[in-house]
Each structure stands twice: as C-alpha cells, then as structure tokens.
Length: 482
Image (cartoon, rainbow, N blue to C red; front, side, top):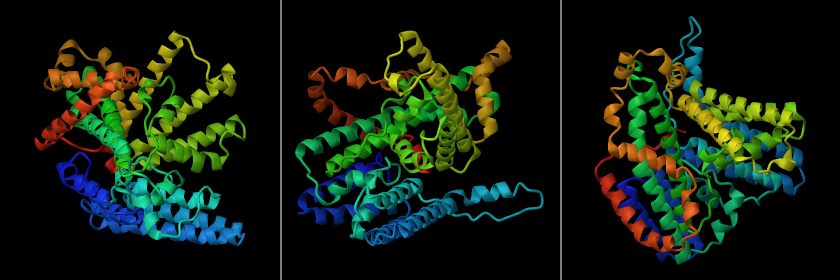
C-alpha cells in the first residue's frame, strides 16, 4: 500500500484516523497503530511482514540483554552483544538484499555456476533494519532507556508513516511520544496540510517527470541525442527529489496527525553550493545515521586530515551499498566520496577552517559553486538511474560530448523521441519542478494572507489529486526499491 493510492487515501487513513480519535488512552491507540502498521505492510507483502516483525523482536531482545549487562556494569559483554547484533542485522540485510548480486558476480568466474537464491527483498528492509540497529546502539550508549514493552519497540520500527521509505527515525527522538503524546486539532490540521502538499508534489510533479525520465532512460541508445540526455537527466533529478521528499512530507504530516514529531528529511538540496552542503540537505536522516553510527565511531575528523578523508570515503561507499545491489549504486557512492575528498583537500589548501565556514561568499563564487554542485549531483544521479555502468557513461558522454560528435541530420534524428514528451504540460511541470526546488514557499510565508489562502487551496489540491489518481496515472515510488 502506498500513500498515493485510493485505498490508502479513501479507506485506510480515514478509518485509522477516526478510530484513533475514538479510542481512549495512549496504550489503546498504540495497539491500533501497531495493528494498522502490520496491515499496511502486509497489504503488499503478506509473508515479508514476519521478517519485519522478527527484526523488531530480535533487536528488542538484544537491547534488553544489553540493558541488563549495563545494569550489572558488564560493559565488555554489552559491547560484544552490540557487535553481534549489528552483525546479525547486516547479515539479514545481506541475505535479502545482496545475496543474488554477490552470486551473479561470482558466476562471472569461468567455470563457476551457482544458482541464484531467488529470495524476494522485503520492501523497506534497509529503513527498518537501520532503525532497529540504531535503537540497540543507543541503548548501549545510554542515549535512551531500554524499552521493556516489546510492542512499543514494534510500534517504533513498524509505524506505517515511515516504515517503507523513511525518514529513518531514531528511537530517542520519539521515545516519550510513544507513551505520552497529545493529539491537538491544530497539530492534526497542520499534519493534514503537510500531507496534502506532499501528495500534490508526488502526483503533479514527480509522477509527470517520471514518465519523461523512464521513457528516455528506457529507450534504445540510438534514439538518444545530447538534448534528450540533458532532459532525461534533469527529469530524473527532479523525479527523485520530488518523489522522495514528497514521501517524507507525507510521513511527517501523518506523524503529526497521530501526535508524533519526525525530523525533516530534506532542506532544498538543489540550492547547495558544494557536495558537502548537498549532503547536509539531502536525505538528512540517512546522512545523520551514517554520521552518528559509522563516521564518528571510525574517528570522524579527530584523527587528522588523511584519516578524515578516508572515513568520509568509507561512509559514502557504505551509502552506495545501502542503496542497492548494483555496481551503479556503488559507483554513485564512491563518486560522491571522491568529491567529498576533493572538497576536503581544497578546504585544507585554501586554509578554510571551522571559524570561517559561516562566512558568506560573494555572489560570483556562490553562483559558480551552485553550478558546480548541481552538475556533480546531476551526473551522479545519471549513474544512480542507469541500469548499468556502461549506460551511465554513455549518458554522460551524450550530455557533454554529444553536441560536438553528431552531424545535423543525426542530431535531429536522435531528438525525435524527445519531441512527443515535450508537451506544453510536461514543459510546465519541468519548469515548476525547477522553481519549487528552491525555497519559494519560505520566501512567501512572510505574507500572512497566504496562510489563509492555504486553507482553501489544500482541500482543492486533495480533490485534484484523488481525481488524478482515479484516472490510473503512472504512480511509482523510487525508494520502495531500497
């Protein structure tokens, strides 16, 4: 079940929201939300729900054992249990997500033939595994108290707004709200508006640019010219941002409806002036997770410039692997790691340190930095979207060398596929996507009249979204694959 489906919008959400308001007490509401979350997940993957619940119970047990070890001041044993729990979680993730990929690579060795497992990867396994791991680690670090009630841990991991595509929520961020939260009309209204805005981003921008991106990236290479390559890259760049940020908006909005406050997952990443800044704005919950549970334990920036660069490189390699079992994702992670190293080296050479990181650059430097960041991110997303590395390199070659390699006749022929995709509607959507990638809303919020207009616009948006979805429009969610 997805948020942008009529089943969710017209049946699941209204029923759960009404029952939540009717039922008395937080404990009763928690039972409802846990059952609703299980139904939500099982709706699409009946068998895989047991894997998710098994992960919850295993990590609940690990945390309970660690808590007892710490109470008895057996920190060494607690540390060993944490290590075992992390290995167990990574092993489960490895089997379901990477086993067949590893087998396919081994089968490239002459004379080696291993039958693929054919295991189906549970939706959202990367997200709920990382959440469960962070809970166990936080108990060991004493960042949160061990939870004695297994159903509270299950609710934390399986809560349907963030179950299958994030944001990755840390237990200590909502620890108090699980057992003591308030559901006010103001927060509910705010959550509904946030949800509708996210739904509109998904339905009216992400879904439309997805058609352009998928059509172009799925075409025969002979049909792709320089202009097609650029349009495809821009369309996918917009698709992945509006698709994923829309899901995060809806998750945050749903959380508010039920009294939970999730942290923001995106902060206009496409206005960044460096790759370092981009990762402070893009998929913030994942970046924070890797920072707190991998980068800092590796030593962070406390052991000199060389070690800092190596640690960042490891983090981005892990980020690429986390996203999927394909060399394109690994390359994408390494690619961002390389630019992180280049920027770290540049900062070292130019003498920039923490004291002047907040200094405002002049307009020219800022513009050049923005162009650099957008181009680097765009090229990275080409490989992220490509089915193979060779397709990624072909696409980048077409983007930057295509205009100088094709004859006039060939160039015209190569753009024939693009022409039907450039309808007035699609062009308007592309422009709207580019504009709304900037913090336009924040600029307009100083006008109080807009807040009043929003109360009228959001219901209209909801109706339009439902009408659009009823028409059976293209409606994929990119991050369901991860």
